[in-house]
Length: 301
Ligand code: SF4
Ligand code: SF4
Image (tube, rainbow, N blue to C red):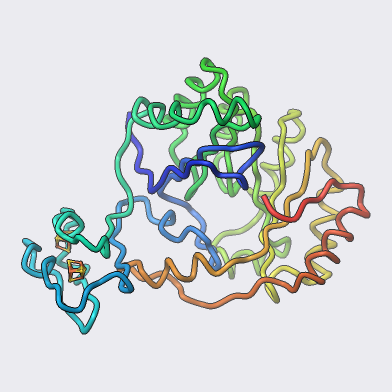
C-alpha cells in the first residue's frame, strides 16, 4: 500500500502534544484560499521553482530536460506544464536546489522507518506522530494501517483533519488514533463555500458525531483578518461548540504568509490572494470571547 506525501517534518512542536514528526499527505477536497500548505492541495506530485536560488549563469536544467519544457528567463526558469511529465531530471541536475518535485510515493514501512529515528524525542516529550496535509483521511486505508502500526509500537498518534470527509472513514480510524485536530473555519455556509469551495455542513455534523462518541478532539480555528475574525463568526462558532461535549481545547492559529510564498513557487498556479492575520489585540479578544464560554483556549498549535 502506498500514498503520496510531500514532507515528513521532524521536531514539530505545533501539531499536537510534545515533539512530533508530522507526515504531510498530498490531496485535499477543500480549496481554502489562505491554505498554508498549498503543495498539499493536489493529489499528484508537482514541481516547485525556488527562483531565489537559481543561478543566472546556469542553464543545466534547460539542457537536461527530455521534454524541452524549461526556458531560462533572466535569473530564473519557466516550466511549460503542458510538456513536463515530472520525470525529475531537472531536480537532479540542479546543484542549487532551485527545482523540487513535491510529492513522492511511500509505503507504511518507509514512513515507519523515518518515524522510528525520533522515538527517543517522542518518549521524552510526550510527543508522537501527526498526520496532516492535505487531508490524510483521503487515504483512509493507508492511514488506518499506519495508525495500527503506531499503536502496536506504543507511539502517540494525531490526525489533523478538515472534517470534510466521510464519517464512515473518520469513525473507522477513531479507535486507532489518540487525538484529532479538527479544523473549523467559518460558520456561515455561503462564506464557507465562497472561500473553501465546499459547504461546512458535513464538517459540523462530523464534529458532533465524533464528540458524541467521546473521541478526544482539539478544535483548530485559523484566524484570517476580515474573513473569519469578526464578532459574528466567533460568537456563532462559540455557540455551536457550546452545544457539543468533550472538546479538549480550542487552538487559535493566526494566518501566516508561508502559504502565499509557496503558492508563488508552484508551477501549477493556485489562487494567490493575499491575506492578513488579525492584530494581536484582536486575537486576544477572540481568545477571551471563547474562554468566556468555558473553553480552554490556546493561541498557536
Ligand atoms: S520534471 Fe519536467 S521540467 Fe523537469 S526535466 Fe522532467 S519533464 Fe523537464
Ligand atoms: S539547473 Fe537550477 S540553477 Fe541552473 S538554471 Fe536550472 S533551476 Fe536555475
